[in-house]
Image 1 (cartoon, rainbow, N blue to C red):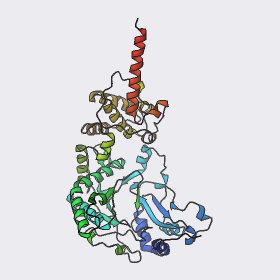
Image 2 (cartoon, one colour):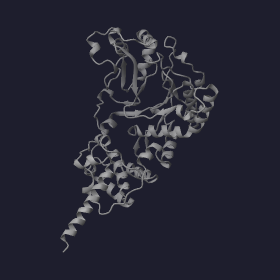
Image 3 (cartoon, rainbow, N blue to C red):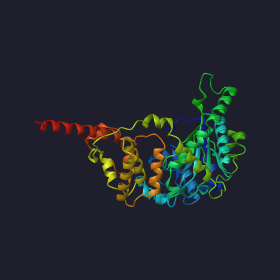
Length: 444
């Protein structure tokens, strides 16, 4: 039996086939899909778009399989006939999107990744707040000499701002920009947030009081628009894709007319196609990236990270490598993949247990000689310099991070701790205690 549907859900089911049959809509989606993962989102009842009853039990509810991509423009409407209502794509650009595997290691991902677009994803409870944040961001980007910027309506209550891969320098020192996803996009996002936060709070507070969006007693920060941090293989709604909950289209907006945008402009039956991808100049975003990296060097990690990880290093005596957890011992044997993440782990572990900088650098150098291939010295020096410009932080907690580079080999003692530092401290304490007991027993 067909479940009760909201008016908006009923509407999108009626207009989906008509909307995506437009050649200009198909072209806009297909042209933007080049070198990207493309994943459709399906309705619960694909048979209403012509699929068979058998097909309706093949897991069409939610997102489609990954990886996937568009080979032909006609693929779009074929997916729509099977129940697709929206299309989502990757920020990362790939040589062959279909060759991506979920368990693929860092080295292979880097080999497949051409680069990445910076997508600033504005999320808010109110579209008027999102407009304010979008305008502030555009102003900051122009201050950093970015003249060509793409912006589109998200389909709900936010916007997506695009800085294409072509605008970024392809290498800084010995570090390839293509290999710094999602680290560098996250740093840029945090930098932008920090630069405009004060103005954003004032403008949103003023608007809230004027229009009574929130009660006087409610802090404006509780409804503050925010930028969503990216993650590996992060997807966002493609330009001119529909939105299931609003039945609106993710249309491109003139970045000089953000304040004039109205939700009715995104009516899928009235949209006019514009290009979301701006015609940028090579290296146009270099100043933005360098400023963001310099800012990051001078500041500690955000308050949430500091709350979890900021602490005073512990000075351990008589430390043996045997007291390191299995994951660290495996890393110290040398790695083929995941070396950058392992470097991050080792630096923060060694600092956390009170190792002097000279000894730390010596240990890292010895470890790197065992890697195949070894990390470039520029990467190691940069990571160490950045680390010592801020307070010591603990390495990531156990399991997922270490599983990602294939070094999580837990022993019975691992069940008692949540972080490699805890493991080393407890093991070292036990070893010293046993050593003292042994000496006491031998004494006459």
